[in-house]
Structures are given as structure tokens and as C-alpha cells.
Length: 125
Image (tube, rainbow, N blue to C red; front, side):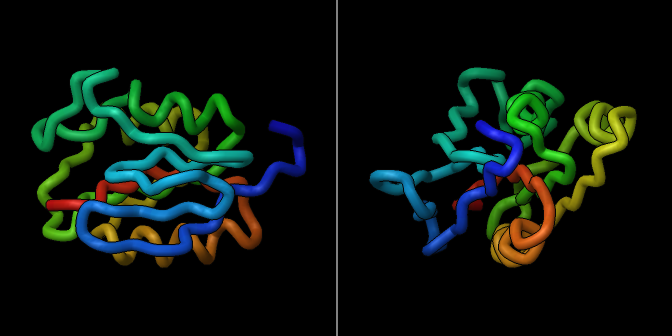
């Protein structure tokens, strides 16, 4: 992941599916960051809809050089975000935007044009 690495473009979003430029196949939930993307496996950190996105979920985005982060709450906004995750980003001076999934993908698309943006995208509820 070089300094000039750009965050990948989301090419398609629908219920349960996210297609990302440069990635084979599609994701159900995805971690997007400067230089790449991968499946966001909630089991790695024990994430559940409640309490929601945890500091460990956002850590990888920061490790890949994200200086701004977009967190999606799902199409029906059922996924929460812990105050600890938001505090971790704030403590590091990283702006965080928490949005409904379609809005999160739209905002991420705008930010990737000029920022080193990372995102956690939840493509269902």
C-alpha cells in the first residue's frame, strides 16, 4: 500500500452484495481502505448489531492509512457503532461519518476522490 494508493471504487451496491473495483467476486460486508478491500468478517472481532462496530473493526482501516472513515449502519440502520470506536477515531484525529448504507457508499465515493478514506460497509439490515 504505497503513499499514493487510492481507496477502491464501489461499482455496485444491493441488498447483501457489494462489488468493488479491482476485487474478484462480491462482498456481503466489506472493509475498504487506501489500496484495497476485503470481506469484513464480524466473527474476527465478535461484532454484532448491538453493541455494534468496535475499535478492533476500525483498526485495520487506520493501519492501511485511512485519514477519514465512513461507517455504515445497514440499509435499515440496525448496526450500531460503539462509543469506544468513535472515541478511538476521535483520539487519533480521524473524522468519522456514520450513515445509512446507501448514504455511506455515496459519501465514501465522494471522499475517495480527495481523501485517504476507509469504510466499513454493511450490506443488509
